[in-house]
Image (cartoon, rainbow, N blue to C red; front, side, top):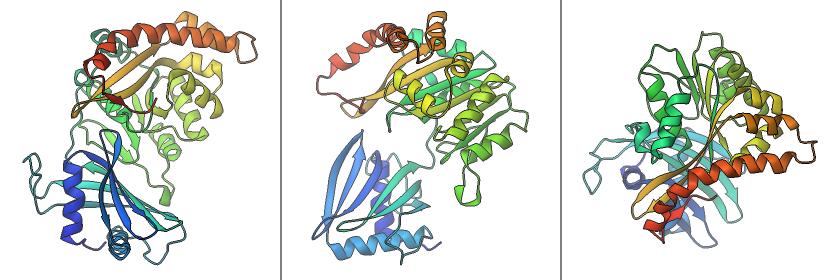
Length: 350
């Protein structure tokens, strides 16, 4: 790895300190432009010359160990930066680390680069600080006492799903349990938890890591994201055989999560047998803060019966949606005050 120009490192770190989660360096017909995602919104930062944009991309590719001569194919890389200057508000001091995940893609007007930013010293929030209603907090704590089954956290990109899993793991890690996670990447370091970052380049995928973990006498498994059929099958089978499995899934609402799992080869009998809790969440932006809005769907007799009807039953989707809608109304209605407090508030995409 090569060192990066201090001006570029400071530029990236300063935006990470200011709460920017992603930086986009995009090619336009006669220039490059920087944009940043903050509080869920992508906002313009600056326009620079094409020559400067190409130079910055080359420098970042070199620092991340990528091939600077390859512009036709996408590339992925990582690097860790430190700034020589602290944040303007004093919340981060010089030397505070920022982890960057880099992706490049050739577009019509030139190569584009996106940097996913993560503060190295970021800490996991406690469960009560996420914005859950009191009855929701109580429900999650009770379900976490069950030694087996699947707890699935769903929501759109950037809604805080992994942070919710970290908060749950903090509760579980206080007990005498063997806890293992497989993540891409490890966002927050947890005590008493065996955390494994995946490395697809050497064959360490989510599925491969899970298979190895199951041979290490685990009590609790956390899957950073269920992305493929093999990972889904291993996770569900583990949840059916005496392990508590926590995972995230990209799905905008509970019904979408069920459909997604079916697409990944999980049948309704498997789901009915292992489902303990489905958490669907979005982030509400109020002023300069982000607040979670949650819907909790625990398994119950009526929902299990609706699942076991199977998709071929004429009333299957109607009954399933009714079960989910009834529960969502009970969860979401008390949280409408959060929306009413700030009419201009924005949420992550539903």
